[in-house]
Length: 234
Image 1: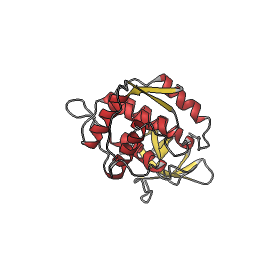
Image 2: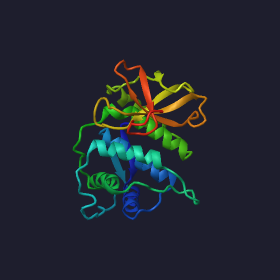
Image 3: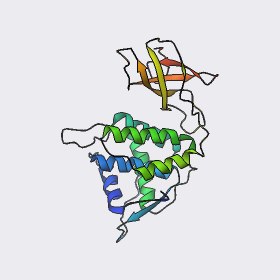
Image 4: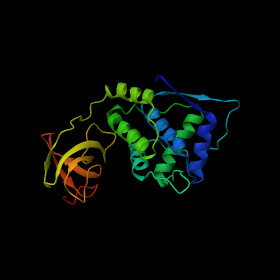
């Protein structure tokens, strides 16, 4: 996927929905996630159906400085909070700084401007996890071309790729896999990570649930915690 082709009108509608705290269709929500990831990786986006320029007034909501770490955390929360209402629409739960970051990003895109940040290759594994997780939660098919694009970008990453860890602490959880960072998204390594449980006999933390942890200096052992700040031992 050398170029992401989307509708100019679709991006304008997405911008309006965020501005008005509206709900998304599952496909609109996934498209937004894809666009954010693609822009962070400096992918080329081509806007279709551009009959006339769409005017969006520059406001305090869309003129803030775009930062990688904040956008990465916005993606984290978009995955963590995604849910459907009774009409099968997605409730957009980002507020404050995070929604403003998304608005700023879309404003830049709709104004045909370039994003002035370096590609965030160190978070590609995280992006892939977020994309796959949201597709599963919304029961949407994954785009094979987009996944191939992410896999190619992953080759430029230097992040920790270990998937097998020795668990320090609870005996009922026997296998976990690295899911994403939790802090310092803009750095090569971070302090706190999020893990998905693969094997467990713990009723409070069954297979498929998430835990937080600190990877130790040996890079193969992990201390697990109850909270994302990693202050309460599991």
